[in-house]
Amino acid sequence: MADVTVIGAGVAGLCAALTACKAGLTPRLIDRMGAPGPHGCSWWAGGMLAPFCEGAVAEPAIITHGQNAAAFWGAVTPVTHRGSLVVALQRDRGELDRFARRTSAHQRITDLAALEPDLGAHREALFFESEAHLDPRAALADLVTALAEKGVEIECAEVTPDAIAGPVIDARGMAASLPGLRGVRGEMLVLRAPEIRLSRPVRLLHPRHPLYIVPRADGVFMLGATQLESADRRGVTARAVLELLSAAYALDPRFAEAEVLETGADLRPAYADNVPRVTVRGRVMHLNGLFRHGYLMAPALAAQAVDYLTKGIKGDLVHAD
Image (cartoon, rainbow, N blue to C red; front, side):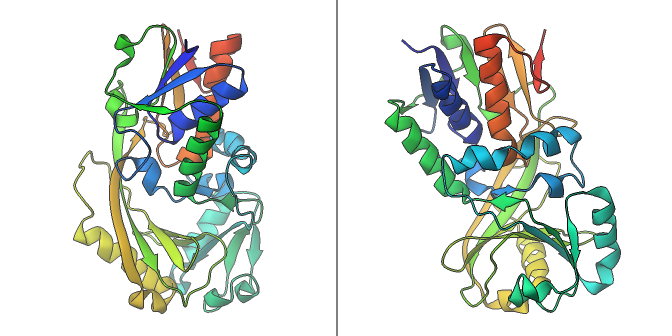
């Protein structure tokens, strides 16, 4: 018999199931699509563990809890601790100044080539040394493996919390259809450019088309992401491809010759304040609203849900009557 049933095997549900195991519980894990894959927004994430960069636009809870994410992930999957860089074109230097005022835990770099030789054309940057990044797809696979080692397999079935007896953690994202939850469309590209070498995520500030580039192995890069207040589930639009590639070209013209490996689009579930929460309704805890902070905030959300379930502790991300 399971102590708790987790519905949804994206990053939130997997983190919740593993956290439940660590607390001595036996979880049951169900997802209508089975194992993680390109059918969910967790698959298309950038994997940046960058709480201080997110502080430019995010609420304080994101900065506070996000600082603990790297430690959680480091026990599950490889994490690269090389910091984050934020750059701007010369004409957009004011954007860099504004970003610096809105964030903390960074230093201004004037010799960017010393950190990233391939970005030497950009003279200034903000370096967030304490930040990290991971490969989201590898992290999902490693979570599935860690759970399997504890005897927890993903059941492929379509269920709702009402059909399950006992405590439930609902981590279905947009499929949960919760009041106040909205979809924010994101589009991204995966490129191969083996002649370009970057060792850490780079954010290019732009008044209209900000861009992040996250290095993967073997010259592969994730480029993202548009952010549209839309519930449109179409594939990637031509406009998004043009905007992302144009911004990448501005960062390094060699991206014009990159091989496009994948395009992806999905909806990020978000609440009005863009802060995730655990919404408790009777025996059901809804883990949702991760917005673009999935890998950064899923560990904290899972921990607070399990603490509430096992100890009755109501953390700051728990909304309970």
